[in-house]
Image 1: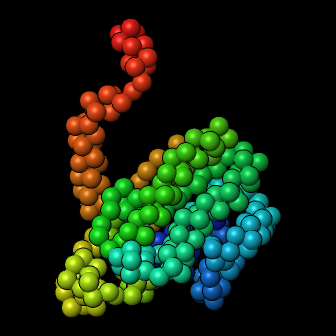
Image 2: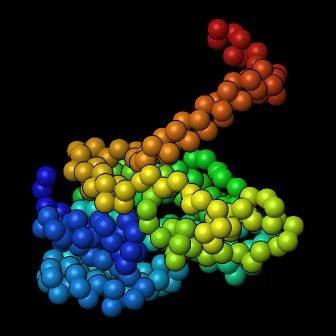
Image 3: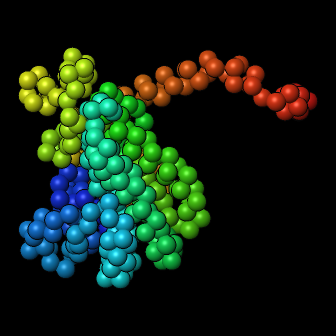
Length: 289
C-alpha cells in the first residue's frame, strides 16, 4: 500500500462517505465533493489538510468542470477518481414523472459521463491514473420497479466498456464496481419514489412500496458498506485495474444466474443469427473453413 490522492463524488453518505473516512484514516489525501459543504465539517476538523472539499451537484456540468480544474490545481497529481454520486428512482416507468426521469439520468448516467470527460484530460496529461465507477449488480441484471435506475447503470457500463479501451493507451485504468444490496440509505432517505398508480398496487411496484413502508419484511441487504469500501480501496492498490468488482453474495449469485440465462438464450439462437448473414459472406466463410 502506498498513500494516494483521490477525488470522490457524493461523499456525504453511503459508499462515498465510507471511502473518504477509510482513506483519510490511513493517511491518503481526499478531494471530496458534496452537494452541501457542511457535511464535511467534522472530517475537515479532524483531518485538516488531508481533506480538500467542494460543493458539487453532478448534474451541473459547468460547475463540475470548474471543480475538477480546481481539484487538480490544488491537489496536483490525483491518482484515483471515484465516480460515486447517484441514487435510485423506485417505481414503474409510467409512474415516474418526466422531471424524475430527467434527474435520474442526469445524475447517474450523464453526470458520470461528464465527470469522466472532465478528468480524463488531466489523467492523460499526468501520465495515467485510475477511474473507479460505482455501478451496481443492477448494471448486469434487472429487477422489477427499478427500470429507470437500471437504465442508468446498464448505460454507464456500456459507456465504460468502450471508453476504457480508448484511454488504456494513456495508462488510465478503469474499474466498474457492482455491489449488491448493502446497508446504506439506497432504499431509504436517498431514494426517490415515483407517484403510486392503483394499477400497480398488487404488483412489484406496490409490493416494494409496502416493503419500504415497513408493512412487509425488509429486503435482504447482506453487503457491509465498510467492507465494500475496503475492497474498492484495495483494488486501487493493484498494479492492474480489475475490470469489475462484483461485491456481495447476492450480487455474485444474481449476476451469475443472469449471465448464464442470457448466454443460454444466445447459444439457442446461434443458427438464426448465422442465417441472416449475406450470401457472399457465408460463402467466403465456408471457403475459409
